[in-house]
Image 1 (cartoon, one colour):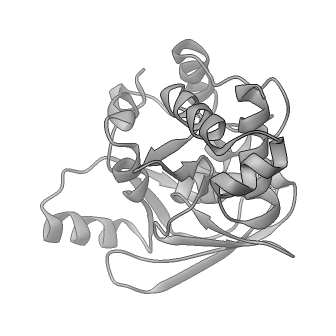
Image 2: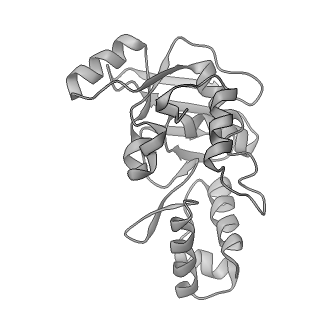
Length: 216
């Protein structure tokens, strides 16, 4: 078993079932021992293809094994969205329209959008990213859990004041959709490689993101 075979099994399992396959399931799928799977999981974690907590898969962006504020419902599958960015990225990766649902952290109002691959959803809501991209991987689960969607900037300001947090970056739905559109392109295919800092910076600039928050 190669680490790439394990990565594909994890991602395709998430795409098809909406959940992280267990170590025994991965071992049976790949015809290897559970010890071999566990070693491969740590290798993928170190390369930032997945996120492990206590040896278990927590995230395989854009998929999440734990609730972080978003549900993403397709025609046949229900996923946890890891964050606003990932929730809007799932339809592009799986190639089908989804219903993204969450609650505004500022006022607890339910929010939902039909998100497809052809054009951004309509709405005046905004996304707020708390943690700069430059430090995102210091605690990626915390960072993703704080990429949220709000009714408007008033709700963002109220939440920041209530929680004592410092304002990060606010995106409208169109810019969020464009950020998500091609970010994970090819992740379900063999040979996928994560973007290096230079290509990531070029991508952010191409979708209209700028400044130190985005490492630019």
